[in-house]
Image 1 (cartoon, rainbow, N blue to C red):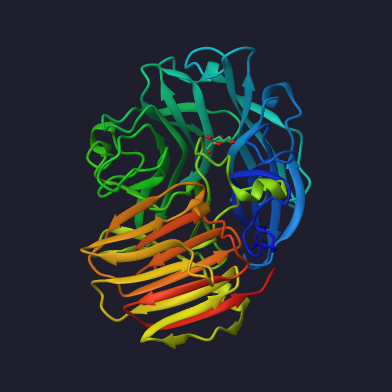
Image 2 (cartoon, rainbow, N blue to C red):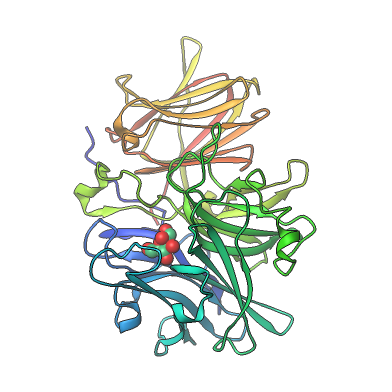
Length: 466
Ligand code: FRU
């Protein structure tokens, strides 16, 4: 029986209401700031505000309440996603003001407005008046009304803004604007890749890790391939080999292909991430542990009036052999570890009884196969995480994963696994973040029993509530 709450102990979430994308993620004036898409009243994706938390160490967060409300005509149906630019001595926010007209607002050419809106702050808490920078009139006629989620950066004395879009002929598109003052923007590049990326590109990003440049984003409508692109919508990146975002569209075509699109996370619940720079220059990614339009109506947290969280903060590194980015939780989470759990060996098999929030490190004995089964003390199994024949799988055996079943990933061998559980979210990192699986997981019991096959070393810790 579950008596404990499903509310998270060390993930960012809204204690009441619905959370989706991280927004405005930055390090500014000695603090990390994370804003997030927030519907504060109900655990449903309704009218969007920006919630706000801040921290000195990315582990302990202060809740700063609601930062932005939909309170002008140009954002009356939602303060949608956006980013922070802090390169000129203040925090400057750019976001999409969403306006829905009466009737069906999801047509490509009618029914909605998407406005680029600006505000700034000296202290990260109090913001200037909102300023309208662009409306759909400023976007090329080849684009429909879905143009959103500005990402702003500076290069040589120019500012650039990247927007995700849906073209009039229903293709995922990218728009880049340029400006010399961050207020007046003109179109710099319009690019509709020929690769089959679906009909819409949300939450675009452009970043560099270990000297490798990449475009990130969330294409909607990609076709699934064996084990790949299995969720409703995707979230990943394209490494730009010899290109930058300034390359011609013809040159970019070499890098922006379906086979070069790498997913950040192979689990059920990961979307709309932002990459930002930490105090020490490391690149960090944080995402929403959810996906739009997925079936969360049976999530057990709904009874407690909340739904969703952000993921852990993951440091990004470039793996030059595999030519992928690895993402692994920042070291600071180790400071939350409490007593080490006892690993029991019975009938030659290991198991451990865990709390519903833990951090566990596992080394495999045989890098070709292993199995971990999570369930309760009465052998009611919820979830198998296993590796065999070059395929790693996360497989729910009952409804504790919101009635979803299986996600898989191909991987050459497995050496180590790190698993974080936080009441109703599980994040599994294979080979220090070569492959990651994130999923909502609502165990039926207060404790979780993990049973192991073919694992050598297991270290497990309860984690402190922040
Ligand atoms: C991605 C997204 C964004 C939009 C926001 C609205 O999850 O659809 O494109 O700005 O969520 O909440």
